[in-house]
Image (cartoon, rainbow, N blue to C red; front, side):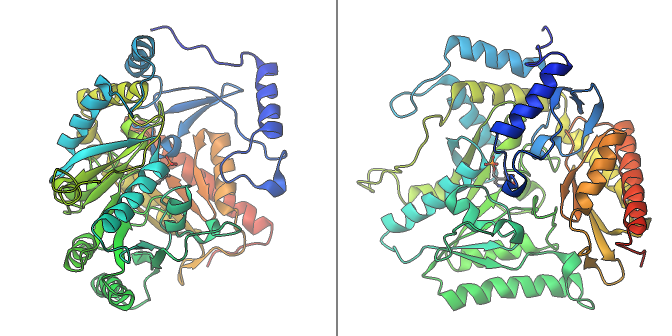
Length: 471
Ligand code: PLP
């Protein structure tokens, strides 16, 4: 297939793109204080694990887009599948009709999810998947005649999306600024972050505390009022927080005990990021009631998300015994044929290239190479699983104090790394990485070496500016 033409050719075009973006775009999490002044890298094209900026510089895509570019960039099979579908049937109304790619993808995902999660509702992305799952829970309890069972339990440092309800479940402090949230519906538990446990507490004892906190909270609120617990298997945007061993199974058991629906938000962890189609059962040994997904389902080539619901849950509100039960929620683009065709081609590539096995092979290597950064004085912890990693910088590694002196330390590291050929996702004091699943060992070596150099240069800068001293 011929190489796609970039929208803007030549340096004048790129400058115009950068200028127009500054003047006319509001981008996610835009600092309005700096509106029109923030310089962003204009990405011109991409191939494999690499992005190419307007100057032709090659950058390893450390964050893999936004945790989503599983099969890498420039895969002609996906482009061809989308083009063929757009020509044959670009759209159909999911209200009155259906289409082949959506039906096939639904069946395929049902076969990949654990347990009896056999029905799929397609949305436009991760936020709408989470929102639709939460609205399903509201609908379910209202229909079953228990409208008081409404409360959603989430966790500090979770990220679940950018609609009103999904954002209300998100628990990152930085995001809870001038927006309104459904505080009457969502209750946050602490982040299950072993790195931040009280010194002297074992990981096992810490897990006990978290499980007890959940049970106490359900009892305090009243089980008849608690509807759902929503949890990312690994808290991704919160900083790749991996809960302690046993946490998932024990929290699921509590949910079962108190008839609380368990929603596993696998928007990041599904489709190979942890070396399996879905992580809930394969990695953490749980079969939730609902799984939400997005991102990796199309490798980010086109927007798509969805949720899979268990037969057991669905049976309670469906069929001839349940008259008047209508799940009145949906999107113009639910089951969009072009997105579903892209997803099918993407799943074919994951299978054909044996990417799940590849992640199980190179994932530990990435973690090992990044763990070596732990000898740098600025690094408090390196953690990760599969192809998700986080390097957490701290002011004082002995007390594990978060870096309070300079909140933009992640940005500083990213800036140095970009100059050296690596894009990092900076989040305050964290550098988060989730490269395309096709990354190989040599590319992992380069990534780790550039990141080391970026952190070393940042340490030099901070010392020179009198902002930090090695502890
Ligand atoms: N859930 C999780 C776990 C996420 O990480 C994200 C996005 O990063 C979302 C939901 C929201 O997905 P989207 O940005 O596609 O709406």
